[in-house]
Amino acid sequence: MASTRLTAESRTQALAALKGSQTPSGELDVLVVGGGVTGAGIALDAATRGLSTAIVEAQDWASGTSSRSSKLVHGGLRYLQMLDFHLVKEALTERDLLLKDIAPHLVKPVPFLYPLEHRLWERAYVGAGIALYDTLASLAPGRRAMPLHRHLSRRRMESKFPDLAHDAAIGAVQYWDASVDDARLVSTLVRTAVSYGAHAASRTQVVALTKGATGAVNGAVLTDLESGEEITVRARHVINATGVWTEDTEALAGDSGGLRVLASKGVHIVVPRERIKGTVGLILQTEKSVLFVIPWSRYWVVGTTDTPWNQDPTHPVATAQDIDYILDHANAVLAHPLSRDDIIGTYAGLRPLLQPGTKEGTSSAKVSREHTVASPVPGLTVIAGGKLTTYRVMAKDAVDFAIGQRAAALPSITHQIPLLGAVGLQATRRLARTWAAKYGWKPPMVDHLLHRYGSSLRELVELCEQDPSLARPLEHAPAYLRAEIHFGVSHEGALHLEDLLLHRTRLVYEVADRGLAALPEIADIAAPLLGWDDATKQAEIDAYTARAQAEDAAENEPDDASAEAVRLRATDVAAMQPLRG
Image (tube, rainbow, N blue to C red; front, side, top):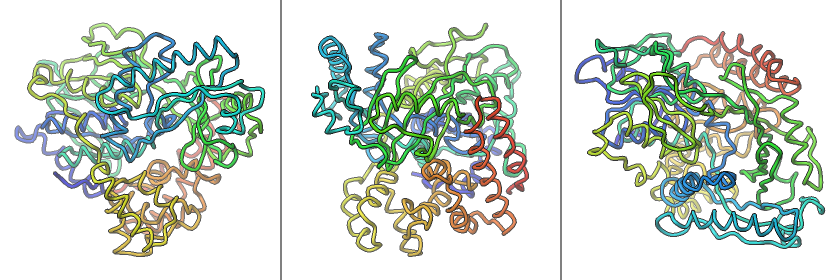
């Protein structure tokens, strides 16, 4: 296997491989455009079929929808109400595969309560639905990954969630799903793909799709956003997995065909774990969809909303109206209502919702209710829709569609490919006791590290052995070790401070100041690894500070347009950063 490290150097090597694709021997089999969970899954699927593969992303890995989800790996209980049994079974199968085999360190079981307002008919109706949910999960091969659901009396429900208002429910049904740090899942997928030979380059934007004499897409023109250099790439198959940017990427082929995608904004708020008394999550029906109260790490994640987004898709923001909506619905069932003062963070993401049909002249294969694969132009495959839980199925479908008849001889094997950190997990858990004693790590820190890195924790410990100061927590963000910042640069491909605070850690919404107090220490760790001089380091600090302040201001605006206008004030500051070679 190739090196698993993502670094500035490995990115440079990937770009060199892309430049070399102009020669017949260097031509890629697959170029993946888009570094979210779907694109990362496609890169891993293609690489493990033995196809020469590259993946490029215009921003940081998982910078779009795939770092802004509800953090759930689930079957989609609400789809049972739509009688979409196939979709639910598919998602539950993937959920259990992630839990048991593919990413047991990243994906964790979480119990949820479905509160009941009516005694007889609702308990029977909801109980039957969740029993069917469990039954569909049991059809997955191998042992069960989750406990079966249970009916709870009011007293038992209140013991599990004391802060549920006394008059909110007469009892509940407890069932199980799972949670994940979505951005870590993506970065781990990319690293795993790289270990199987894929070339990966973030901050690399596709600015044109090239065509051969027959009119088929045969590659792309890229811009290295760090240096400004333009690169032309040759590839037999280009796969567009850009989510809410799907139509923009399709347009680069100069054709009117393709998939139609609508951006829908979902907002979540983050509150400290101690603010709500409960040991399980909640799922609540609203007039529009569902609201989750999710135990996640040291916090509760509460959301989401579902509203059209018509602004720049690069960085959606929460508004005062979004926050009030979530607070109103959560407070309807909480014994001790939340206020804005309880919120330590917010985040907003865009769902790429497939619209009915495809554009004229497009060949397509409708794969499921949730995602579709299409080919608006020969040589270009487009996939859109879907959900984080079923990323592996989406990736398989996209590669199958792209390579056509070759898929029979090169079938997908990602159902048997553990992600980095999964192999040797049990042994690493035992070794962690020794490391904890040596470095003074408390049990919560050990759990945090094992959940984030799995057996790859050994690589992080090697950094601590070389420099014991890295084993210390960050002074102003003690939930993270200094080594995790180093690892984010030396192993996980972070190129900027925002990469470290938004995606390698989640300090942007895990602390009330969006990580600003910890910023100087983080910059001091990252600067020598990335070759920053003092001026560059200060520019990075200024850019992140401006972004954090703009997001704070946006949360006080009433609507998307005014919030986006406030956020754009940070753009000029960020644009002043010098290009990195």
